[in-house]
Image 1 (tube, helix red, strand yellow):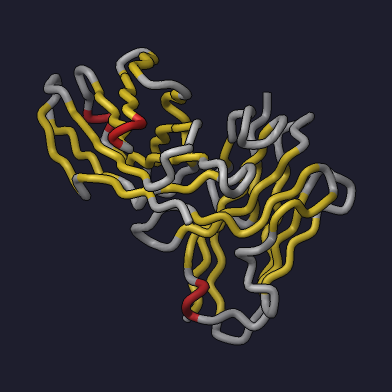
Image 2 (cartoon, one colour):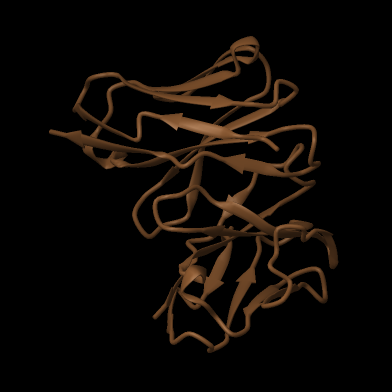
Length: 112
Length: 115
C-alpha cells in the first residue's frame, strides 16, 4: 500500500524567503504527483501537477520530482502571508487504479 | 463555472445519530470522489464513482457508511449510527476521466463533529 510522508510538519518563513516542502512516497512505479493547498475550513486547491522526473513551474510554485529517490518537493518563491495554509502532497501509484494517496500535510506560516 | 458544492458545511451530532452529506459536482464531470479528512491528517479516499457506478468502495466502512450517485450527477454520503471516531471533514471531489488523467476539483467540505 502506498505510503506518502511529508516534511517538515510545520514551517515558518518570512515574506519573500524561499519555502521548501518535501514529500517521499513508497511506490516507485507512481506516475502522477500533485501539490495542493488547503486554507483553513476550505477545500483543496491544486497548485502544480508533475508526471515525469525534473521540474515543473506554475507561477511562484515549482515542483521537483526524482522518482529514483522516491522524492518530490515543492518550492514557493517569494511567499506571501496569504500563502499561509496547509500544503498536501498527493501521489497516484499503479497498484490501485484511480486512487490518489495524500500525505498528512505541511503547515506553512508566512509572516510579514 | 460553478465549482463543487457541498452541504451542509457543518454538522454536530450525538453518537448514534445519522447524517447525510450532499455533493453537486462540476457539470460534465463523470467521476466523483468522497474523502474523509480527520483533523491534522491528509484526505483518505472512501469511495468513488464513474457515472452512477461504484468503482472502488473498499475503504468505506460498509456497516455504517453508504454512498449513492443514482443519476451520475449529484451524490449523497450517509453515516448511520455515528461514532466519535467519525469526526472529520468529508470532502467531495470531481474530475473528468478519473485521477489517472483528470484534475480533481474539491468542494469546501462538510465538517462533522460527533459528541
